[in-house]
Length: 168
Image (tube, rainbow, N blue to C red; front, side, top):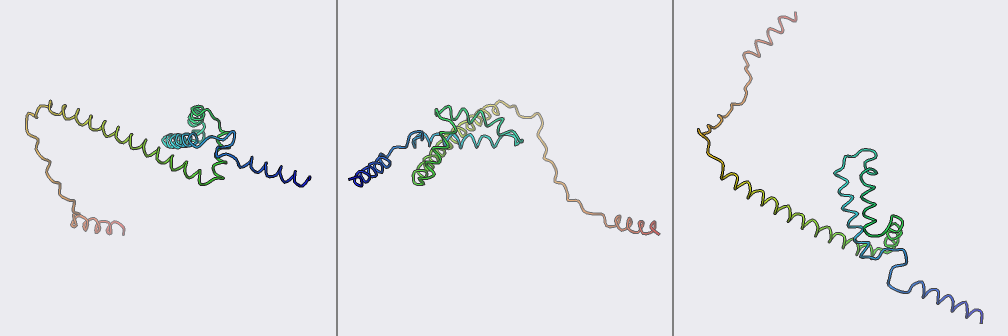
């Protein structure tokens, strides 16, 4: 009978350990982890524009990373625990990073569109300003083409012979 109790207890423990598709307690879910990693990539990218001094990462990065973790109501300990959990499950981690890549591409595309609109507006503004420019009082004459420099061989020959005479 004690053997059956031990076997029953082992099976229940195994079932309880493997039950549920959810993440364990203290691990960020996939949606939150995707958001954290996306914003983490953006923060890391923004730090490349900061002057690289020995303590610049601490000086400029600490506040950004703290704000990032605060945004997602987490901390570095929970993030590292979650990262270890997902690293042990490569299929889940791959899905997360595919989502991160998609989000970053969408953000990049929207920034490109905004930038293009700003450039178009500036060009229209410049075009309107150029219409108000009065023509010059006298025509602008083109700059003549400069001839390439050619060495004066007679002068060089004279300098060579003069140099030989003084070196004696």
